[in-house]
Length: 393
Image 1 (tube, rainbow, N blue to C red):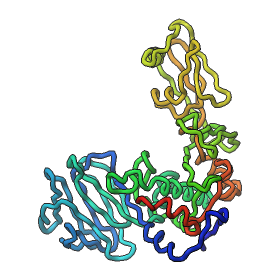
Image 2 (tube, helix red, strand yellow):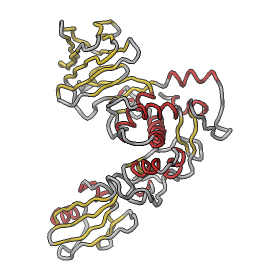
Image 3 (cartoon, rainbow, N blue to C red):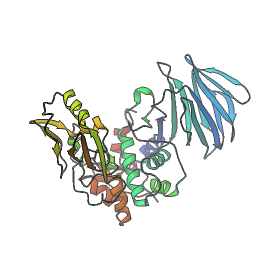
Image 4 (cartoon, rainbow, N blue to C red):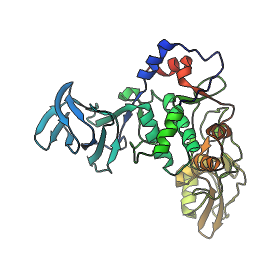
């Protein structure tokens, strides 16, 4: 049964005529393998049936175990199966014609591990003849894939519900991010990690269904920036300490749940010479003979050397550190970074949220702990949000 959370009366308008509009818009177009320069891709049917088309003209029907090869040749797509070459095409579509159809996709050049997907697929070459592969599927199937990719399959239902709501909020807040590329969102960390489905994990699918349509809004009724990270290190971060924007619902706070988890603490060593090179690259004056010591009992935004501030995010990025929550001690020619947490530290700490679920906290309690003065609302009940999200899609 779908849960209903009713927002303020000014934002809730139950008009049945608008619900089919939102239902139709629930399909998501996801750009796949965007970090690769795809040249050749192999499709293999796992279950169901698909029709392969060229500009709406059917080429072939694919049954379980059937294989299709698609490769880019100059400014065209070339396709063939085990029986014959199917020709050259400007665009292609692979459409499921039976319920619960599933496809295995494996990039052959460049090579990448295979993944399993629901939904339909569209393929074309962009303006520089780069292959674009788009997975078109239901929002719920997409959200389930994101939850699995972002958090694994060993958590409890209340955590999965919280993660599903956060991932849905992020999606609806970023539907136009790749509009110029003719799809909604990509499958990389640039958007949300999505790898199709790894396993058909019933608790994840159930969590997505039980929170169907639920999103998080701020005090003005707008979708929040639903940031999350792996582990806070004991304290989350204000949004402006990492990014340039101050968001009132992304406030740093003490996190008592972070300890004794996979990413609670870490240690990294770097040569002092690399540190000096880093300072020089940023025109920071320093005494190379003075040993470095930096303590951070509480999260800070800057490190100061000779009255010159250095953003901790710059240090983290330069040395690929797990977080900005670290202290530094120098031993001889080596700097020892002792840190806490993993990720940018803004919003929900996933490992802490998992522990909260283990302690019996509900998904509402998890969300309201990590996001300040927010509300969980039902998009199916909120035509204001429907119009805002989809009006320029």
